[in-house]
Length: 496
Ligand code: NAD
View 1 (cartoon, rainbow, N blue to C red):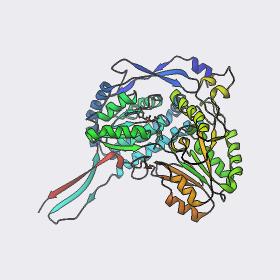
View 2: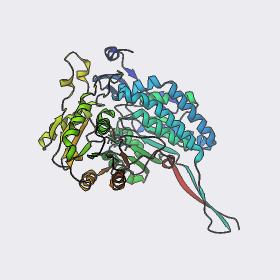
View 3: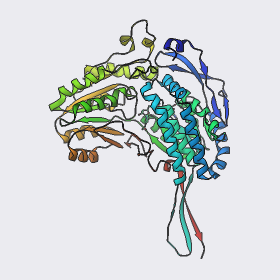
View 4: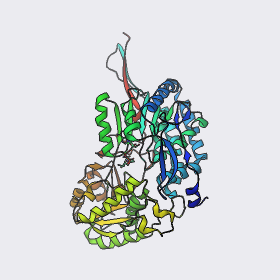
């Protein structure tokens, strides 16, 4: 493996768009720098796409889609399974690009490629399960409800897990018979472009998957506004989801929204404290350095065990190793880009001002690494815990998206539920208890799309995943994963 110093000294690579099967720069000729968040150094460039590039991509997608949709579902499945295999063959290259671009530690980035390829196989299988209904309303007519692809769909992806999300979203859309235009996150597009370059090797026809890079306000909005795009599948912040929803009022485009979270992780006195401390720590620290929509960022602990649990959590946090994401010994990488680094550091400063008390952590890269380390210029924040007097603080209500949790004591189950649900978000909730009845009671009362009992961050493509409240408007994954990519049509055939 090359060293971090060697990689930092390597030439900056250009990664062009994929439009209609061709690799090309933006029409404008402009490029955006992609920075390695472990060092702060530019390591790649991506095209600064705009409305012209989006239009080219939508046209290419519209030209390719009808023939793809007309192919038997079994053939689409065969092509997608082949793609899964090609992805697996390039797993090493792909996870390294992903980890270099967004700072995800190898411990997560590497298995994500294998998981992603298996998800593609699962979705390929679903291609052959699309069914409709016949409805017997009259003896002189056949009435059936069928489902058909939208045509061209737009997929907008955030930076916290770009490769995994590309594999899941683009191939689900293809399995249902659509063509896609993907807008990757501007700070971490390279792994998506690399995975897209493999599509042709698997026999995916040119034009079916198009990748247009660029900023949200230019390329992203052009995709949302484009009349040739029937649906937008957006994953990202609730603020951007709201903005996209407002723009879509004009053309009433179908929208799938997977948004932010501020998830509670509740530890009762009867829990296995060792398992709870490990799960809570993984939920906010080693899980993408807290840059996960499902981050368990609000820790609620029953008062009887509060000091003991905090000590157990402190030990877990102390064992976390920050470093080069490509180093197999690293268990937590940096934040993905300078803006996120500044945002999280802002919370480290504002939390004590609004009444939070630092339990541990609070330092950033310049205090964590020696003066001669290239990592000192990276975007690292150590695992941090703030004890808070109540749930009304900004640090408890706003999605920080970093390795920063709050902790609060509670006495009763009733109080825990009230604090847990006191948020505009409803993505996930964790619950640690040995009381089975309590587990069932709370699973029903917690306002969240996923509730984990005695575990956290458990996910699988065969299990639905989505948000309640302001965390999203429909689940993805699961046996109905293709629903998101299919429109309904009812047909009446008069025959009598
Ligand atoms: P973001 O909303 O800033 O950006 C997401 C994507 O939207 C990027 O590709 C960006 O370029 C694009 N974009 C930005 N402004 C746009 C606009 N006006 N029009 C069209 N596109 C625009 O989010 P982020 O900071 O990249 O990602 C972090 C957020 O994503 C967090 O809030 C996290 O919770 C959320 N997220 C949610 C899920 C989920 O499944 N619910 C999964 C992962 C991440």
